[in-house]
Amino acid sequence: MAVNLRALAARCTFAVVDKGRSLADELPQQLAKVEGKDKGLLQELCYGVLRHLPELEYDVREFIKKPLTGKQRVSHFLMLVGVYQIKYTRIPDHAAFNETVSACKPLKCDHLKGLINGVLRNLQRQQAAKESEGSEVSPTELPDAIAFNHPSWFIKKVQLAYPEKWQDVLNANMQRPPMWLRVNQLHHNIDEYLALLANENIEFLLVDAKSGAIQLSEAIDVNKLPGFQQGWVSIQDGAAQQAARLLDCQPNDNVLDCCAAPGGKTCHILEYSPKIKAMTAIDIEASRLERVEENLQRLNLTAKVIAADAAAPAEKWWDGELFDRILLDAPCSGTGVIRRHPDIKWLRKGQDIAALGELQQDILKNIWSLLKPGGTLLYATCSILPEENSQQVQHFIEKNSDAELVGITDNATDIGWQILPNNNSMDGFYYAKLVKKH
Image 1 (cartoon, rainbow, N blue to C red):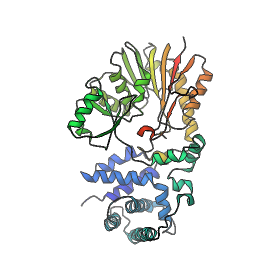
Image 2 (cartoon, helix red, strand yellow; image 1 turned 180 degrees about the vertical axis):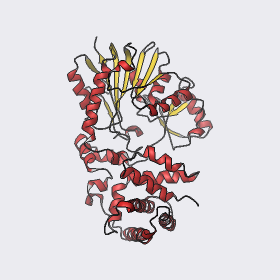
Image 3 (cartoon, rainbow, N blue to C red; image 1 turned 120 degrees about the vertical axis):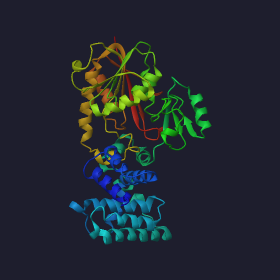
Image 4 (tube, helix red, strand yellow; image 1 turned 60 degrees about the horizontal axis):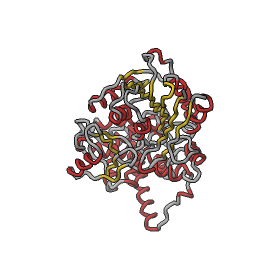
């Protein structure tokens, strides 16, 4: 029997929202059950439901008397999948109806076929009426959580941090992320690789002037990229590609990449600064270090890869030699990469931020002790929240008289460099550069 994509999408989104599973863990399990173009559609349905969750919930609530609970709960997510198709895909309505209702069988909810069909048809009629009357509900008439498809706690934090840009930030999180390339300049310079792309008729939009990162006009299969398997190029967002440049490793430096998995920055530092003496990459999750090893192998690079807790005493893994350069890509809320990981909106809770802040402080204090006098530590997160970024760094400088902030931006008052989502098409990211005084 053919696999029903809508049933898989319902199971996946149910597991994320109700069970707290990450999309990165859950989606591959469902993708393994389908082939070819169906993989793309399944991914579209799952990402779409998670991007637009409050709005879809609002639509469904208009047409059902009470929410589905218990064993019927997965059927609720099937309705959300159906509503998303009608509102946001080019799938013909009749196909969306048929396939969504057919999903009731594998989900063992045949008794709900009538309800689900009724919800979708009522929505279709409502959509048609709104289009003919030109009477769409204005976002200003809806609660912000529904209008902007983000949790209320997060909206409040963004409004507080960026009072003039908060809507831009939330809207950027709803966009599909672009595909960025990192050219391995041990093989080709940027111009040479752009020529290789042109030979394959692969178009690019821009090259970031600071890092040389290349943004493609549209995402493609990595195996179509010239020399991908040979290690000529990697996939990495333009914001993440700033790390190697900012760390600015020198020949014979002893370098530590802390919280390194999946290894994109580790590899970039080795490509960017091939004359360093040694690279050590640590991460608390041994399973994630497999990705680091895979990336190093594909790129033919070498690093000492160790499973270690950066917040714990370093004696268990450290050989006693201080580091000249340290990249601390700290554990964070991930609120700068929501466009790539929409499940972050529903997995992360407001109370998590304070706990993450304490962990970041512990790691920063611990790892600082491994830095040579005169050495450089680059603190990085993929967060946009000041509690994890500028406030964190300010607090550390105040507590550590040997820590000196090095300016990154043109604004002398900036504590580090906060990149907001979609600034120059990049993810949200934060960097602060600290030098240990002699």
